[in-house]
Image 1: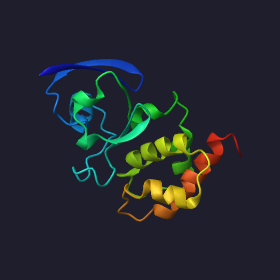
Image 2: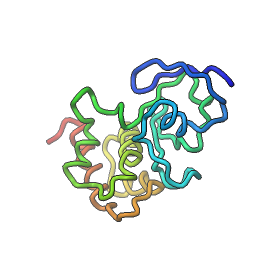
Image 3: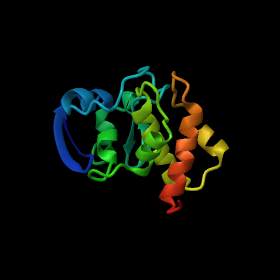
Length: 157
């Protein structure tokens, strides 16, 4: 057991846990942040994606000790108070979901991507989202939502 200190969704957190435990299970079980989903458990589907120091990370493949001293954002912490983040809003506006299971991971992957590339081409978006799987087939709507979010985040209409 080790003490791990980090910031989660803007709040300081200190836990005592097996440092090898997957971040996914710490978030869901220990902290009650169930927006992060278990998908494949292999880091291949993206359902468990969270932001660690603004980078998209697969929480099922990240040992909790790896986040010591870092900033972690889950889907629950992305909104600014009651105001949705532009990517969250775009996913709603463009109906970029069906069952919704992959949506938190998609939104966090897209958020990290748009911070690195604020003016993406369609091909850039497709490449960035390739390893976040939507089994319902909402990929075209997801791409349109990310394009809209990019425009809004740049201050466009």
